[in-house]
Image 1: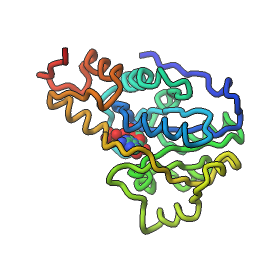
Image 2: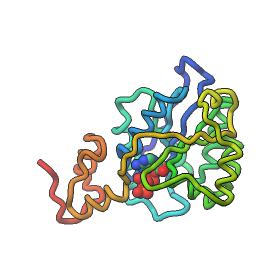
Image 3: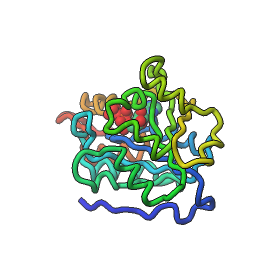
Length: 233
Ligand code: ATP
């Protein structure tokens, strides 16, 4: 397996425009990731979005596909969007993939450029389980995308964390490098990687839940597949 790093943000017309950071397992990447990310590019003053697949998620089981397979699917999925990039830094870093370490490495590279960590509401609600989670807003803004069946927290420390940093005006993201939280409405797509893996494992098709190129790659490599899975014609 050869993983490679890309050079980023050297050709942006707005060198200080915020950079979106989309972390996840991407096992596999699907339209529930891609469509909301595109809408963020359209709604917000972002220079680009970097998809950062994690090597070893700290709070969940080992991904079904290998790091190289997940990166390959991601690269196929984003090939047509010039402001989407795959960033393999977590795949190259040994040990658990802590987002606080990833943001620290991006911050060291980017100086005072605003960084915006993109999370679905499910991930945001799970934030207190993340390693050094309260430090995330010392390194980046948070963009919280609504996800079906996952409301924003209505009580407890996370409600306070949200309310004390919450903004409504996206223009504020460009005015400081970190520290704000912007909740966002995006097209609600009830798609999850778990559902896709379950479908494929049951011998069913995942077509139209993810890009055709990714579906073709999954079939070709027989990823997530039960022994009796029959590829489509
Ligand atoms: P799994 O089902 O394996 O947990 P997933 O579909 O949730 O996977 P991840 O790669 O774990 O995908 O998610 C990465 C990020 O994308 C998380 O912040 C998650 O909240 C967000 N996300 C995933 N699917 C959606 C969706 N359908 N709508 C909005 N956000 C999503």
